[in-house]
Length: 447
Ligand code: PHE
Image 1: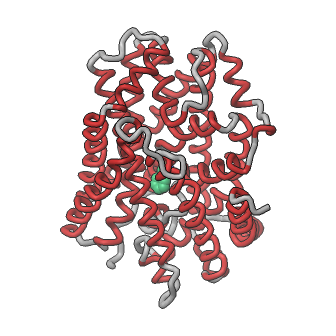
Image 2: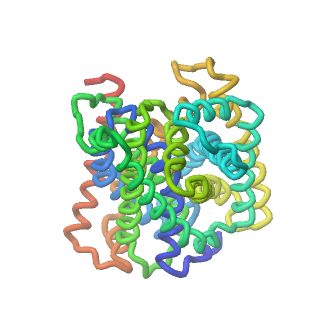
Image 3: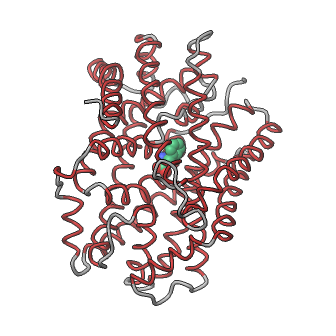
C-alpha cells in the first residue's frame, strides 16, 4: 500500500482517536454497567484498569501503527513477515463487525429520541412516564430497525467517501460542547432533592459488592471506552507524523475519557436516586433518566436536543472507526474499492444487527445463555474478544517487536525517559498478560 495521507497536527490526530474512544462507552455504557455493579467500587476498579492496562495498551497500539504505517492486518504482516500474528488484525476486524451491529442499535435510539424531542413528543411527562415511553419506543420493531439503518447509513456515507479526517474540525467544537453540557447536567443533577444518595453511590465504594464478574466488566469497560484490542488505534496512528509524541497523545485520550466517565456518572446517578428510578435498569438507564433531568432545566428540551445531537455525533465518530478498520483492510488506499466495501460491509453489519435491534421488542423473550441477543453480542465483544485482542497485542509488542525499535519509535517526538519506557515495557510484557488471563480465569471459576 502506498504511504498513507497524514494528519497535519497532533491535535487533529488526538481528536480523531479521541473521537473513536469517546462515544457510547463513556456516556451510555459506563453508567448502566456501574449501576449494575455497585457504583463506586466499579468506578475505582475501572479507573485502575484504565491506567494500568488501558493507557499502556493504547501506547502499544500507537507504536505498532506508527511504525508499520499500514492497516490492521498489514501492520502485523509488515512487522512480523511470514508469521501468523496478523490474526490479531483479523480478530479486530471480526470484533468491530459484531460491535457495530449492536452499537448501531443504540445509535438508532439516539436518533429516535432526537426526533421525538424536536417534534415536542417529550414535553411535560414525569420520570415514570419518560421511562415507559422509552420502553414503548424501542419495543416497536419497525422504528427500531429504521433508526438503526439510518445510523448505519450515516456511518457508511462518511467512511465510503473517506471523510473521517474532515470530521476533525467538527470534533474540535463538539467535544468541548459535550463537556459543557455535561457540566450543566451535573450541576442540575447534584442539586436535586435526594441527590446525595446518588453521589454516595458513585463516590463511596462498597467493595463488598465486588465479584469476579464486576472485575471482568470493569476490565472490558476500560478496553471498550479506549477502543483498544481491536486494531482501531493501530489503523488511526498509521497516519500519524513521526514528530508527534505518542505518549502525550495516549495520556490526553485517557484523561479525556476518564473525565467524561466521571461527568456522566455524576450527571446520572444523583438523578436516578432522586427520581426513584433503579440504577440497575441496564442498557435503557441513560434514556430513562436524561429526559427527566432536562425537563427540570429552564429551556430543558432545547438543551436536550443539543445534547442528543452531540451525543449522536460522539457515537458516530466511534462508529466510523469500527467500519473504517474493516474497510481499510480491503480497500488499501483504492477509492473505488473503499466505497464499495463500505456499502457492502455496512449493509451486512445492519443485517447481522437486526436481532439485536429487536431484542427489546419482538425478541424480548428469546435468550441464548440466558442473555438477549443484544446482551450476548455486547458481552462477547466487551468481555471476551476485546480482552483477548488486548492480550495478544501485549504479547506481540513485548515479545515479537524489538525492544530497541520500540524505544526508538516511542521516543520520536517525545522526551520520554528510559525509566518510564521500562515501566511501560514491564506493564505490557508482564502485568497486562498476567492480569488479563487472571481476570478471565477468575470468571470461569478456576480459582
Ligand atoms: N470506544 C468506543 C466507545 O466508547 C467504542 C469502540 C470500541 C470504538 C472499539 C471502536 C473500537 O463508544
